Structures are given as C-alpha cells and as structure tokens.
Length: 118
Image 1 (cartoon, rainbow, N blue to C red):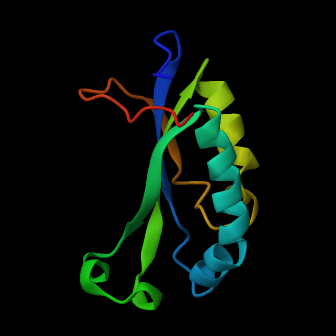
Image 2: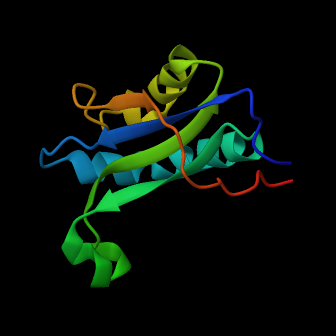
Image 3: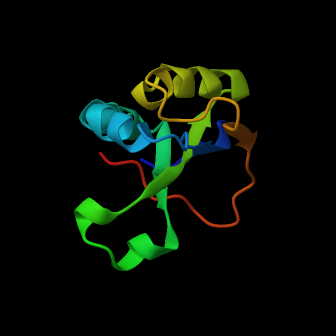
C-alpha cells in the first residue's frame, strides 16, 4: 500500500522540555508511546519518525544517548486532525514534549516516503 495522494503530509517538530526530569518522563512512558506509534504506522497515518539527540549521542552507548525531542511525519486530512493526534500522544500528555515549542506544519516532500507496512 502506498501513500494516499489525497492526504496532506505534516511534519511535527516536538522538542522535549529541558528540565531535570524530562528524560525520566520520556523513558517512563516510552513503551506506551512506541505501542501507539506501531498502531499509527500500520494504519498509514504516521509515516516516519524518531527522536533527535545531541551530537555526542551518535557514538554513545544506548543508555547514554541524550534525547532532545522528536520529529515525525504524519499523513492526515488537515492540520487539526494531525494536531489532535499529537495531543493524544503520551509524550504530549506526560510533559515530555514542550507544548510551547511544538510545531505542526504542512510539508512538501522532495522524496518518497517508505511504503506503509502491510
């Protein structure tokens, strides 16, 4: 199944809060976050995503990587639908993502997205 041409693409830039407890909050709800992602990927809604890290994290051991936030590409009917999906995420609800700095914007992709898993 390929990307549906009639749905718009949106990029979400979701920086984490920078306080002392931010990483602990991220790790505490990460299993639920990843479970929800799997569901959205299988539905073709969440197309690409991941956590962004500090430059020093590239060569760091898994337990020493420092996350700064998330970047996600969704497909949706409109920006309000995508914003609602973001606001339903456990990272949003549990104060991992900085709500004041979070950005949702339409994106015109120059490359193809990976196929939706079947």
